[in-house]
Length: 473
Ligand code: GLU
Image 1: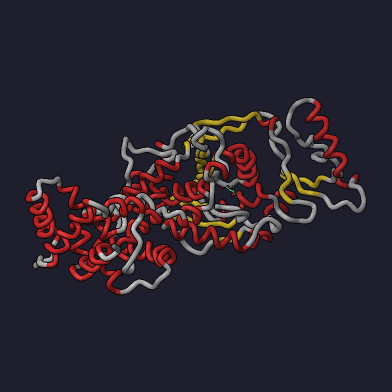
Image 2 (image 1 turned 60 degrees about the vertical axis):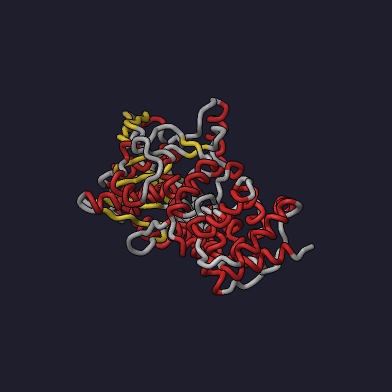
């Protein structure tokens, strides 16, 4: 059997972190079955029936967010709104079959039911007053809603692939509206019809939809359709245990991109937020496709921890291709330095990237550390660096500048030998010589190996930068 999953966001905001994780799980489940089972497809449906709250910008943000994360969907995205006629057709079919009915309740009557429920301390349930009433009693000039006939007795049991067996007594479910008085379908009807028409086999979504699942289950039953498997995944909470909100960093995925996170790091983090494979922390996309299953999705709420994401991002930066990282830092670098970067600089950045990426945990941090290769002479030294090129430091710098001017083969190991020999000759620690060099060449007290930096800067730039500092007086 081909597994068909879907991601069905409502385009009312951006693709937030919880939605991205839902999409990821659906994508992985489908791709796993495509590669290791008997087929799998991942579909995208934009639930845009609420015209007032849906907007094109949010739809684009969903496409962009999924694309950035590498979660490609099969076929064209489906617009739920464009299926409205089909939803109406199904509601009318249920009406004809006597499985749904027209309800002419006024707003006042419904309000009364709501008030009574509140007074009795229970949630509002429609009392079924039009369920068996003769339609000839219908008041004139009132457009009815269409309600489903929900079972009155017994219970509904859903074997949820994450939550286990979940049961609700049917007298807790009321005769839900399928079609509003203005003829528009409700979400509950639309989602069932679309999932059926799209041949969805597995509905994987946040557990805030668990109560909807009972109602949807009844609609499937009334229609005589196969019920898909349900898997309701626990929501993401903040580090303090409260439901994730903006305060915790529940931002759109584009905000994480702009903060300098790599998509593969965010995917890996979201994957582990609620699913595990032993103690594995770093899991590539291929491994995730191979290993992913719903049986190891946790039942407890996962906690979002930006520090963990940041540290995982550092691991992915270390693994990332150097040329790609250069591309990623260029916009920030140009903005910070306010200049176009020469080809020479770009070459230096590419050569220096292996050393730079060892330390950075985000792209902006990487860009900041890369400034050392992109500076235009003469440049300012930071305070710490300035203190290193004064007094004794300056003397060492002068001596080293003289020595290096004579240095022939401009390679890190040879340069290191020269500086080491100088330190040994003067009976000083290597750092006493290397730190002023670092300060003068990079403007900072911290950088990748200074000998590597010298090799990458090249002879002329290195000697020029030293001269600038020595000429400062
Ligand atoms: N459109 C719903 C939402 O964005 C999801 C519906 C579903 O997955 O069944 O919460």
